[in-house]
Image (cartoon, rainbow, N blue to C red; front, side, top):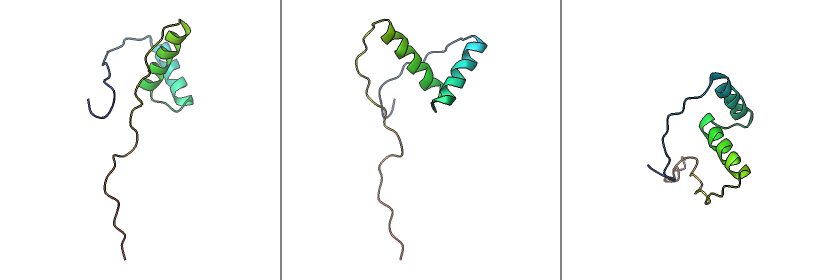
Length: 72
């Protein structure tokens, strides 16, 4: 995978009402549904006392490139 930590791809079957609730929470917190699901899983594991090693933050934004040339 390019530019970031490896991610596990896993198809998930979820009750429609539960999925709708996750979508609403994601929208309220300005996250994608995928990021919201990951956040909820991390919160649930933390609440159970499961310790995870720190994740590497994913790079965001545009890749670095050449500075634009000034026009005269």
